[in-house]
Amino acid sequence: MTEEERLVNLYKLVTNYNLDEHQKSLPSSEDNSLQWFKSFKFLHPASWAASPQNIPYIAATTLIDSYSCLPRRPDMAFSYLWTAINNSYNDLLLKQKASSDRLTDTKGIDNSLALISSFLNSKVDNKEIQPEEHESKTVNEIMMEFVKRLPDKNLNFLGSYILKGMAISIKNSEYTLPIIRKIHISSSYQTFEKRFKTIHNHLYWNYGKKYSSICTISESTDKTSVDFGIKDERKSRMITRAVRKELQRILVNNPELDQFDVAGNPIPKKAAFTNDIDKLEFLIFGLLYASRNNNIHGNVASRLNSIFANSKTITASTWNFLFGYFYLSLLLLALKHIELDDLDIHLYNVKLLKVTNKDSPVVS
Image 1: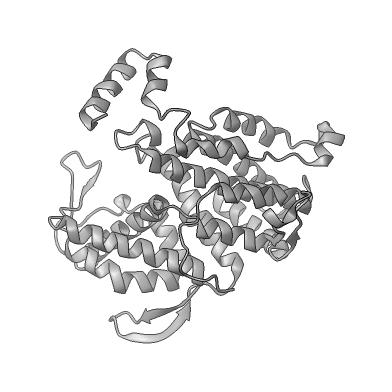
Image 2 (image 1 turned 60 degrees about the vertical axis):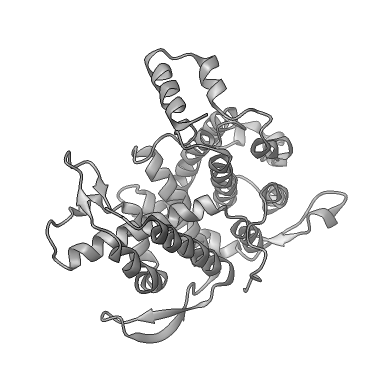
């Protein structure tokens, strides 16, 4: 279906909604990108079976909504899943920080990471009769399996908001008129710049400056968006692709990164991450939370209703859902709602995703 045909279909659905027609516009249930769900393993702790009254009630109600969207709408499944995640890290904060005067996502996630760090190197044993198919791994090793399977589309999303945030910041720092209002710099980029200074510095001087040089940025006439005025689309794609590959290298290998002073002069290199929990922080804030914010604040089109949606869109949303499901499980473990060995489902679920990085060895 062409983009024009999809726009016509969108017009028809939004002016006279028909469920059957909407279903036809989505990928078929036989699409290869949806077959993972046939082998998906649900959280099923023995403690819940023994005492159903101990199931985390609010998280459970939203998980049901999340499951109901699968497999055809992993994007919607992720949105409902985040509600369960949000409730869980809020509960953790309420239990751990009695002096906190209000709940915020940032405080909740930060507190959860501090607690998760205590069992990041704990071993998750495989309960199956044939364990050689899914060997036991530590929680951190399971996280790294998700990293090695990051789809290009997710990394492109990350690289895109980083480059665009840098381009606007660089333009404004040069005081060339018209100044672009800071409201157009995404909160995801601001979070990245603040939290991951070493990676930001490395990307800024190696890629951000180059990307900014091909932009002629201006606000749209109605002030609701920014036109980056890129004429050299080929170079734009090259820079974005290079950033995508560099982000994957950083996440998989944790290399020493080039660093620069405020004038752009080289200074001693630094490791991308000082410890493993920093990498989990990057994945949650940089990818999951950023994706959640884009969706919930209406910054992007509905993923699978977009005229640009394809099987890669499904794969990207599936990674978000499966990794989000892993993060939720870590939260439930920290809350003592499940046991460590209940995480064994992720030894299986992570392998429902294809490895996208085969060349770079994982460096601990």
